[in-house]
Length: 102
Figure 1 (cartoon, helix red, strand yellow):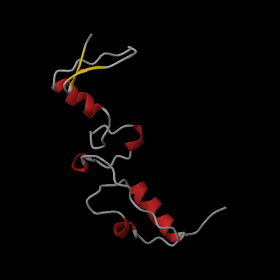
Figure 2 (figure 1 turned 60 degrees about the vertical axis):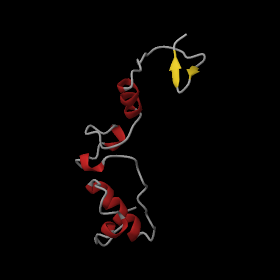
Figure 3 (figure 1 turned 120 degrees about the vertical axis):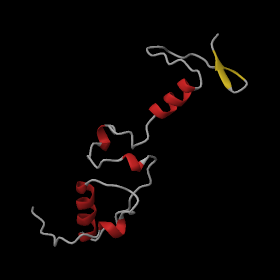
Figure 4 (figure 1 turned 180 degrees about the vertical axis):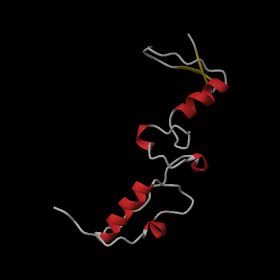
């Protein structure tokens, strides 16, 4: 089934001007509005000044614009934590506000 939609951009009024979005997202919002839906941009954690509008958000932002858990790790390492992989944590021992190794 093909759907003919008059092309008129309404995404500018729906998507906040301070959020950079890919052209595909703008088109999706336009189609939703044309279908009588009320699309809303979801607030996301990120540094959108770094966004290059490449559309690779789902794959992991190559420019660091989108927040992910690596920021926690970077902060922890910067505060002296050592990251270990391939380990199972059975318990966590805290001394004050720091985790210690037993």
